[in-house]
Amino acid sequence: MNLDTVYKSIDQMADDFKSQQIEIFRWLHQHPELAYQEFETSQYIREHLEKLQGLEISSIAKTGIKAVLQGGKPGPNIAIRADMDALPVKEETGLPYASNVKTDYDGQETHVAHVCGHDASTAAALGTVTVLSQLKDELPGNVVFLFQPAEEGAPTGTDGGALRMVGEGALKDPDVQAIFGFHANNTCYPGQVMIREGPTHASQDSIIIRIWGEQAHGSQPWSGKDPIVAGASLINSLQTLISREVDLQKGAAVITVGYFWSGIKVNIIPEGAEMGLTVRSLDEDNREILITRIKELAELKAEMHGCQAEVIFGQHYPMNINQEELYDAMLPTVERVAQAKNVLYYLSSTKSEDFSHFSSEVPGLYMYYGAAPQDRPLSEAKPNHHPEFMVDEKALKFATRLECNLIYDALRTI
Image 1 (tube, rainbow, N blue to C red):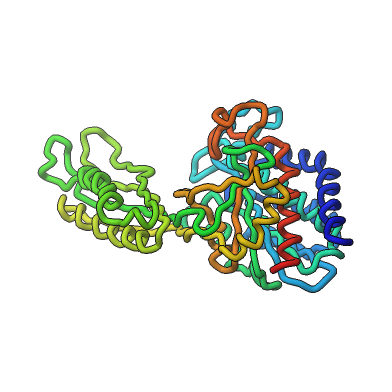
Image 2 (cartoon, rainbow, N blue to C red):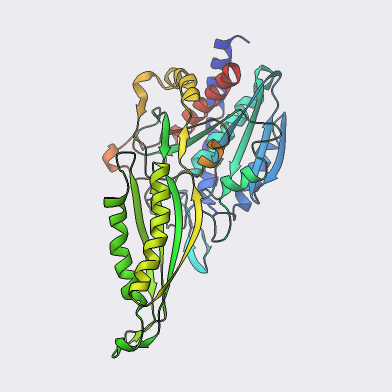
């Protein structure tokens, strides 16, 4: 086939798959699963992949899947990541295929819903592998499909999905030369693409701080050491690290205390207190300053109040950076598929994305495709993680077209 014929074939095959793709999306939406619990999802994906030709399918990272599509011609190895886990949120969209799933999360019963759009990521990637498997003889190289678990954060004490996949060889055998990541976004409509070069997402560090004091009766606080007062003092001081100790000209930084709990009764000063922090930075030097100073400040504040502090560093995501050379090579494809007027450029975000573990290993390109419902103003579209978040199903076919074209052009040009 010549180039134009391949492009036209991609468009036609994506259109032919549209009805089945919507069925897949709705099934995934109705069967959401949390991090490392994606057993049904994984089995559903595998059953679809096993119907296609030219794939080598293997399990990875507990519930993840790696599928390698062998092209008919020599060339590079290009990967695509599709995340597939859901969130512990009660869906409130009112859709006929809304989730009613409940499960256990950290010892508590919770609703589960695809309110981040990973059902769309998976449905789009299944469309892409379906189309490209029919064009495998025309592919000048191989395509590695990575269906990733646990993007939304893994259970305490375990690695997140991307880090675990990298550690288990997701980018090896074959050695991957570049990787793409795609995500639904409700700040633009189907057919639009959001992209940028350089840093796209901040680094993220999860930190737990435990403060140990001495229990006492609430009527006699002088007879104990109050970890609540020490913790409150620490929380108030943490924000000065952002406002006074890091150079925000280099990039934004954020410290958020997500929880702070202690005690069990109003008239007892408890022995201990605990808080959980997330630290985000768009500059690595700033991150190192914050990590160092948070530990120092926690220990000093505890000592000031006669207490002791224990600082526990948890999951870390590096900054995600879209490699400039890959961005420059692929931008013409994005503009051709979406039309230049529909290509939007966004600012670096203080959100984090564990796709960064892949892009830290090989050149990566992460972008958003519009998914906001077209029947309402953008101002009414709910953001990712909101209980009323929903994906316009018109976004699915477009995402598959975009992915297929980018992968094919990358195989030809990288």
